[in-house]
Image (cartoon, rainbow, N blue to C red; front, side, top):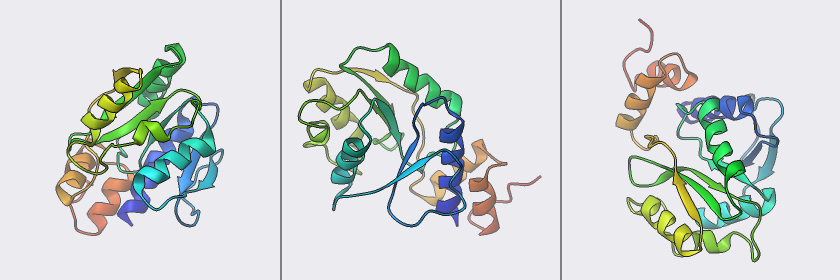
Amino acid sequence: MVAEACLADTLEAVAACGAGRKVVALDGQVGAWLPPGLQVIAQRGATFAERLVHAWADTGGPGIQIGMDTPQVGHDELDGLLALLVRGAERQAVVGPAEDGGWWALGLPALMPGGHRAVFQGVPMSTPLTGASQVTRLRHLGFEVTMGARRRDIDTISDLAEVAALIPKSRTAMAASNLGLIPSALP
């Protein structure tokens, strides 16, 4: 219920942003949470890094990739990150760092020679070092990296409470409150 609410809030921001193409890489079935105008592709790969590589290969780019665990992100912030790529050179990348050391957003140019596999090679996933390692890897590959705003992603109940406080009228806050995971989001 909370995960679906996070996904719905995140996709609402994606649907409202100015990207010419909006794609959801999904592991599972489409639900009522999918707004109109978003293309769905299947996630592929056994590891998280492989799923990232395949999502970029299947969509091409340029683009911004985000997860569903930052429902507080708005369409205006996504548009700002996209603008950094549009203005940037062919070797421009954007990273939105997460407070836990990971990243919540990654922006890359169009498909590179040899694919995007090199972008994720050697980057430890889901660790406190993921974000810094990703930035180091991008710079090693010759990218100029622009940093987006630091955001909290939702990995724990404490994270959920902090994010829900930022967006008290969201689906995410309402779902968490209805399950008793956080205090009521209503006054």
